[in-house]
Image (cartoon, rainbow, N blue to C red; front, side, top):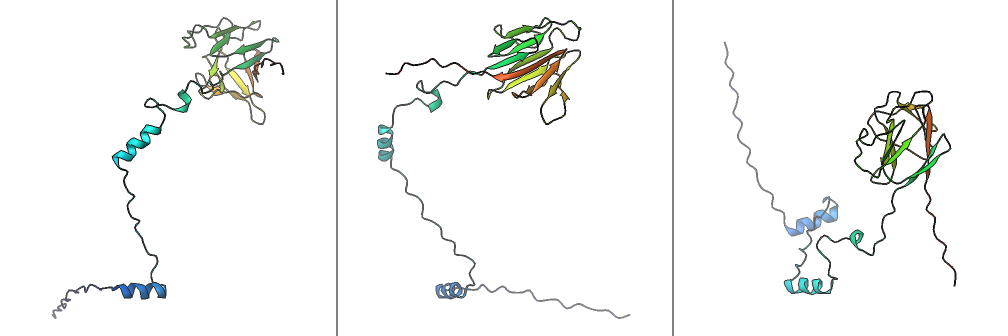
Length: 201
């Protein structure tokens, strides 16, 4: 039997390459440098006296002040919409509310006593006592939800198949949408505020 011995490899000694400034210039001229990284000098720090001078010329405002909180800023218009019902009623609403045979704000989880309560006739006995709830989102969009009604509510949107509203889930309503619920039909129109006329000089 023949034994084979492996030769031990000698460790490679790394010789650091020294690059002189002339070498860098030559490599840059030959195009062998990918890029030259230049570190910008640090920005000068403002002195305490300069900071005091800048604060002295600024208008006095409380901490956390924004333009939106200024008393001179225009107030955001209140959200409003006109509900167009199938019994030829047009109801201007500016807040949350409920629709049904004898709607209850508490049943829809609405604590606002000024909320709208819209009662509808129910000759075919398809309407729940509190059938729909409605309100406005933070951005002013109008929404409705099925308030756990017996027969549900259906949304008809042009260009889309009709769908049933999910119970307890808000659905944003567009001006061209139609909501069918409990033998009734509901659609919305934008509320246009009347601007008083100002006499011309």
